[in-house]
Amino acid sequence: MTKPISCIIVDDESMARDIIATHLSRIKNIEVVAQCKNAIEAFNFINNNAVDLIFLDINMPEISGIAFAKSINKNIKIIFTTAYRDYAVEGFDLQAVDYLLKPIPFERLLKAVNRYFEVNAKHLKNESNQLDDNDFIFVRSDRRMLKITFKDILYIESLSDYIKIHLTETCIVTRETISAIEAKLPQKDFLRIHRSYIVSLAKIQSFTNEEITVNRKALPISRSYKKDVLNHLENF
Image (cartoon, rainbow, N blue to C red; front, side, top):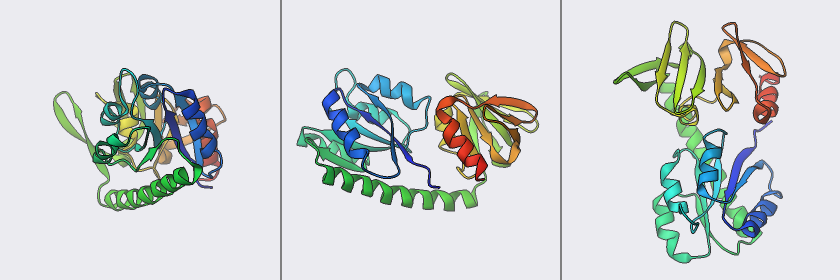
């Protein structure tokens, strides 16, 4: 079973959010996991949840969509939405998947979503080829760049602005968000089970509907991740 694409809608106008959400409800394999009325709400959400795609309004109060796009993980794809044509060039400079002009008809949004699927398929292929060559990453800890081999990772724990990488022999603490480190891991080998935990599939000793045991440590499965986690494990 293909995992749905998790997307959020960020727009300060509730009607604009509702129109996009209604359009997306007609498209298979797209799941709207949140609607945010400003960039701050969106930033807080993506730091604690897995997000693949953002429908992002450009002209918003306080923090514009352009500024927000520049601040987030580049692995999260963006489809800009706006009532102003003048932003198109800057939007594409940020390598946005598409740029939609309001009011957005269903057919035009569907074209943008199909473009996302094409872009994502190419990205996954390139990522797979790269991971075949590299089975490690480097992380910064105590002013040094340390090599972490994927097969040595037991699980990863979020500590606010830091993460703790639990290895077979030791633990490493580095200043990075769990969502950022998740994007660097091979998806076929690791699973996000909670806003604070990622586990190595190969290191799972047992699981229930509520928790996963790794290295005799019981890790909770959060409600927001439970459906995807259990579906993944039961079909692994």
